[in-house]
Length: 298
Image (cartoon, rainbow, N blue to C red; front, side, top):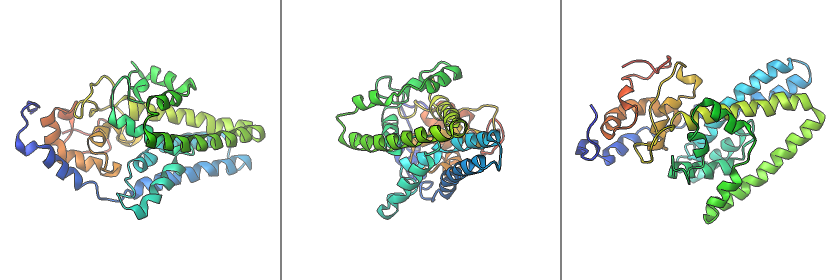
């Protein structure tokens, strides 16, 4: 039963919610590390295998596309420091996995990191949310068009946050990485035009659409601004491992330090709090999370 959010009982206080969430924010996310580095290695191997005719270009394209769809989430964990967990001696892990996993999508990690932090700070804000161009899309086709047109929206984002020195410093680092990536791709186009098209350009376009659809659009579309209002629990016909479990993404916005692999258990433990706070879709959260379509049933 949903409780009036203006009069939350003490047993559903934010302090108690945070204490429970903290118990799921300790585990090292080794699965994400393996996926992030693993998909990058597999993607790079496609170049060798295709160029040397060990596999066909079409097989390489298919595998490279899967890699592109798997590449953002491991970096996303790094952006939140969920590998180092506040340990300065392990901070290099965040940078390593964050940078390597994004090679397939050709995204510069420093820019992804600082812009994503702004997304968290201003989720669904039409003027300040860096993902609002995706969130405001009316349907999946508009999401596709927004990711396929090739428009670089990051210059506008830079202008919006140019008074934030940390943002500017990270953004500048990312620009250098971006130029290196473009130079590498341009060089590959000269020597391996078809391979570059089918192993990098098209897979990253597909991967970008996939990421925008499930990370940015579905969890936030049609929602308001506010801690317990801007993200939702949702279901669809796909098993959740095909959507990176983004049906559970709302708990990440509430507690970003909960690692992705720990979110299913965390959501079950936090369900009474989510219902009490009126989180959109919380009434549909099952009593057990599984991998079947519709996330299972209560």
